[in-house]
Length: 343
Ligand SMILES: [Zn+2]
Ligand SMILES: [Zn+2]
Image 1: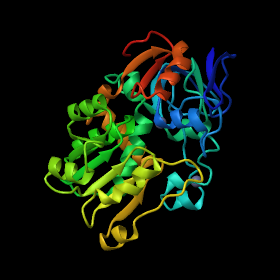
Image 2 (image 1 turned 180 degrees about the horizontal axis):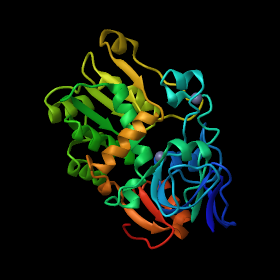
Image 3 (image 1 turned 90 degrees about the horizontal axis):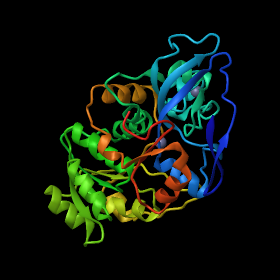
Image 4 (image 1 turned 90 degrees about the vertical axis):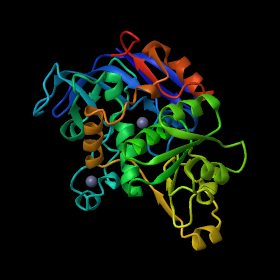
């Protein structure tokens, strides 16, 4: 089988490896679609504080081909989707319902989705391997993980609907935030730089605001009628984190969604935070509840994620695809072990 391996920043090798056999509790998946993601791009560029180099990729859907001893409720032949981690269920964070802060979250992580086959770890197989509805393509089903993260952010934001929300950063997560906000009944503005991304955001239902066309607050206010109730930061850049509190209304909330590199330091305007009563909220990862919600959202087609896919390419193209992502070309690419078409 082919397995894409991230060797070091900007070095991916597509290796030939033996197909693994599932041991007790494990499930072997034939990957049908795997998606690129901003987290993968960050890891590709500079490494990641939580994700090691090695087998690459974490968003996928596929077919079960074999199950290890003791696996229940999963049968060979079943089409499934998954998220790459599952909480232990035992530690203090898990018992408190904050499973995204589980002390053991990354011990059993499933990495290596850019491959023909993927071995699912026992904990993920037991908790976060879900059946794929037959009306969903594998590409749509592979959105389970990013959508769970986005829904976790909205839960943290806890905005009454309808509110007004500006999303800054129009990568795949920013666009998913726009779709989600719209589906929840909020009025959305999309703040970005590149014309084609702004046009796509507009198609998805957000008022476009070009960040370099002048003062952002004035533009967002013009687009939404007033300064927004919330701003969602989805660029993962320090200077946007610092500016976002100035774009929201007094008493508003800022969701800091795009993570920065380990060791980053940022500076906030104390007067703005204090006298403006700005709530800074961060969001990390997802809980089982977010995964269940994301699964239901996809199944019920509460949002149509298909416009976020900019390209469908064969797995063999992975080195070139990441070079294109690095240059800021496509939003999100589906890498297909078999035919490079919607499935
Ligand atoms: Zn992801
Ligand atoms: Zn735990």
